[in-house]
Image 1: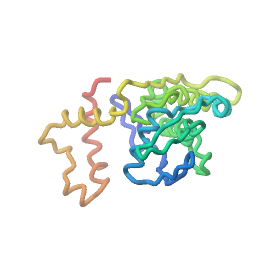
Image 2: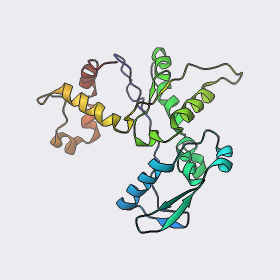
Image 3: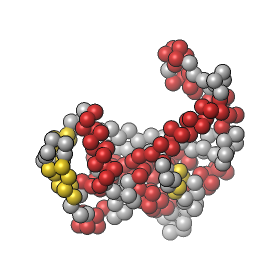
Image 4: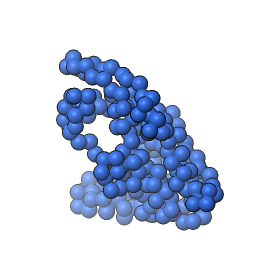
Length: 219
């Protein structure tokens, strides 16, 4: 979660959810963490997975889907179709003591100056292939609204979740656009030597310079 608003500097306001792939067994098939398996799982995720608006209801309503793996093995997926996405919104389902997507968004925005929080809540932009799962935008919007609603039932700030077409590659296109603005000879580039010597600090020390470049981006 990385809050950004034109002409506003939001340093150290980003958050992350460390959910990693682990070897597991679904539908009686052992799944390792090899590259081939991860690519296969990504293909299955894109084709049949979805985010449940109501988990209790999904347990009874999820339709079974039969799939044939490259080795000829046939599997049937039912509740797995939404259970694979649920840890992003409710990590404790895996026993993980961390917050989900909605709480991460709120944490990142609340770390920003108070006068820019409402515009940020109204413009939550999704990026990445996982956000293309059916029901993801609606579930995130619902969770944000429910969390921001006060204990006495008063609505919180207006929430807007923006799900653009092609958002799977949105981060790459944003980086490419910024790279085009910097130019080949820009001092804002981080060289291989600088990164090898300083690591992530090499990037952070140039963030101030990058702020002036991002101000020319269209809002």
